[in-house]
Length: 204
Image (spheres, rainbow, N blue to C red):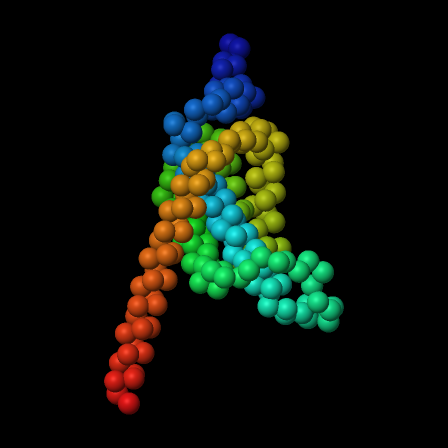
């Protein structure tokens, strides 16, 4: 009986996947990896914008003397920074975060339309699916723990995804893009409210 061709056995295939598809630049050959990279960028931008609006809220609360409800005592980290401008920029920060989150969700929604051509691509798709558990009611319900288990098994066999390097310049551009969109939206809403207000005044 002839010896089997070792080039087609599972360990060899896995090893070749690990060596060839995890190398730098492999995202150019797998649409799922490119989608994962874009999703990471969008989610990171949304997290940064979330922190910005939370810090604004904290500064507004601290400077207006609002007390911590759970402790019943003034906040120990009172800031001397003026809240001038924060009230007007806070809605912009909130809308910018929504724009970034919406972009990340759109990328998640496109997962079924993208075909992975490597184990790395399959892992990338599962990473995005598991990352969506932040937006669901209970991540302990079926099938979320089961998907996490499959992802863990795949990583044990084929290895984890390569750690991507975040470009500060690109991150600034992403945040600025969402911020500019939010500025336009808030300005349009304020103009709409002003028109409605003038209309109400004219009626009376």
